Length: 60
Image (cartoon, rainbow, N blue to C red):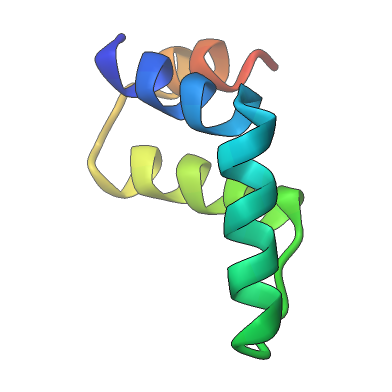
């Protein structure tokens, strides 16, 4: 559950999230929140996290 906690703090902190988006945009990198979500899910599955646990962490 530690992964979920860190992930939620980062995404739910509007100051950190906004700053990260501005920096990434200035670097010319395409970014959208949904890409971060897909990356998180892929990382879970790649590291052999049980699919039911991954679904719970993703709140699916």
